[in-house]
Length: 420
Image 1 (spheres, rainbow, N blue to C red):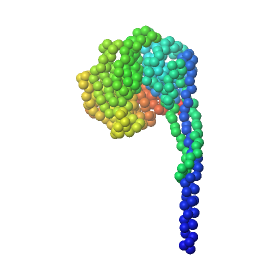
Image 2 (cartoon, rainbow, N blue to C red):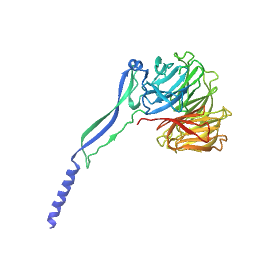
Image 3 (cartoon, rainbow, N blue to C red):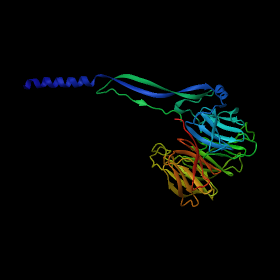
């Protein structure tokens, strides 16, 4: 029997060697989005009012008189006639590819279109007319998913496609594999008399008198809009990096970034001047303010590192900052939150969009002891504007309006649902 063992062992070794040298097929399937381009001339000619369309992926909001302007992310602007808050009317839609930010002065809508800025006549909201294109106002605005900006074209859509990479490999014990790489599809009135105009806390555009202020990723830009359809750039201020929001209060601007809050004086409207700063760890950061305090919501980022790529503990909170000494803001109180986003304040009442935890209303008479008055848990809100006893809310589920005439009996008065 022993004389057969060496031959058997050799056979076993040969079998394993043959298995280790087989040619194997590796197949990988990729899903990607390919940009669809149109000439800038063609796109700009299409910037006009059309029939109203359903709300689907809403972003920033702006209120001007009886009209509400709601950004449809990267698509354009919905105009809502809110003359009767209990029955708002979806009036029209202005198609603006790449649009994420809006602001309104009198009868002019200012809106970004990727790297450029538009001035649109909305004296008749059902017949908007493009008046002016200011080029390269937002040079840092790159198209999503690697499509480089083109000086003569805009991206108007993204087409989902798949490709399969097949290859033959020779290696030991390689088994057939398949994988998939995903890339997310891109997710910003008529009257000559003074009209109340208010933007949300997530805004990157704001208007104070005859000046439009915009924040880019790292800068603050001032435009003179005394001639509404002819914005004139007056100054650019470098603010650092990861700038996110801008909020006006009297002669000051409160600017939120992922690393802190910046306060600028606009006593000279054409030349904003730095005042105080309040620093924090790297989080998403909208800010509002009153005469005594700034209210800053910090929301954890999507990854587990800070702005410099270093591992960091994620936090979700409301920071209340004393700004009575405007040159030296100081932290007064921190409140834990779930997923805070936009916020608004009317008198002593503070409204916070706490994401998955709902819409929260606080009595902020004593900032060191906020009292929770009400939570609407049935929505996942993004931003809120409180104005004249009506709270206007944009949420994942739609556009909502609440009557808070009686703060102890807040009532939902209307809703326009998202079309899913």
